[in-house]
Amino acid sequence: DCTSVLDDRYALGSWSSTGATGTYVSTGGGAFDLEFADDLEFLMGGQYQLCIALDTGFDSAHRVPITIKVKGVYDKISPVKLADRVYNCYLKKKAYYGHNTAAGTYSSTETSCRVTFGYSGVENVGFELPHDDDKGSWTAEYALDPSSRQVTPQACGETEPADFICKAPDIPGPGACNVGTRMITPADADERTVRIPAVTNRLEGPDFKARTVAACYCPGYGSCDETRDFVQQIGVLNFYISKICEPGVGCPEDYTGVTAQYRFKVVVQCPGAVCRSQQGTRMKFIHKVPENDLPSWMWESGCRTSTHLHVSPSDSYDISVR
Image (tube, rainbow, N blue to C red; front, side, top):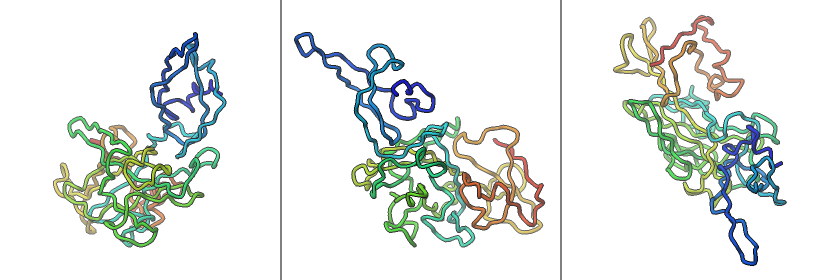
């Protein structure tokens, strides 16, 4: 129905650009063609109808009897635009992070940073016209103005993937951080997930900082082997860090661990202006085991219910956001 373009759920900002303006061009003999000079941009995959509003607005638009099939990721139920959906990930100092952090080894698949479209029925979320060549990737790191804490986003298809995230092997399996590709084959169709590889274990000093990149998708466009093929933005990846510091003002030097009986301070750093000064922000300690390192959007994620045997279950701590 052409009138549904006014519905918030199917707003133009989620499904396509702001539309195209038509111009009547005379073809002689009193006849006119309706030509559109503007390009249409589809931001999600799906099947579309072409609607034309003849000077009256879309509440009385005409439907052209053709169906446009657009390859790519779609989500018909989320209140957040697909491109703006946030995934919370993290970085570790001089160590890989992931689902197997207890071992501290590199993994291209068992990581807690995963972009998913599997939380609802296939009819509402998924991949339109999936292809064997479909792949996921990410952009360059968002630029940050230290004084204003404002970030400048990077566009999918225009910037090379940030290299603080490891590569994945061309064929899923064991690999190494600097071998393979940053163009990732999604997990199987049932899971509908793009697993972002582990972050490098070489982050320290000024390189150990919070970061943001956009998650990108190549819906079988071209051969999915060049940055320009990844035309669809499917989310935003925020990478947080935490530092172990000595008590006192600031954190002039941070450490990878502490010794029993010593007092210490935990400093959490957020990318850009993600963390806001507000009451109710809390943190707690839980065991370092694989089941506690699942993505934050999963109900099984340990941060929801887990506790530490040597810390009281009621012990959680206020955070001062600066």
